[in-house]
Image 1 (cartoon, rainbow, N blue to C red):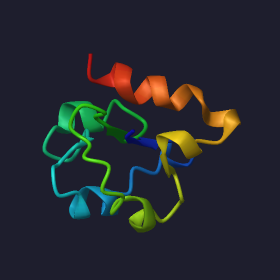
Image 2: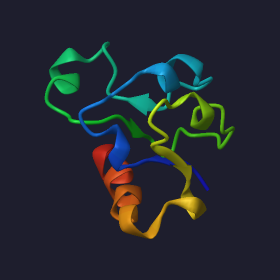
Image 3: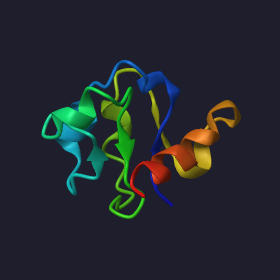
Image 4: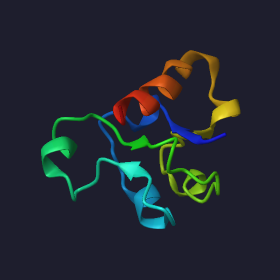
Length: 86
């Protein structure tokens, strides 16, 4: 299981979750300005995520969910997060 960033992050991209991630699996960040400006949200790499959960409480817009807890209306964000890294 991994964590997923969903719709509340769109056009917000608050990086509090990036700051606490121990494995740097949340992208794009300001380290990649060419992507950060184009993309409307942050994404969690499911291959890098260690399922620690420290990002979830840091999100000010409550956009991060454990994969099994993603609300039905945002189910497509699980695939969107994975697809971003392909």
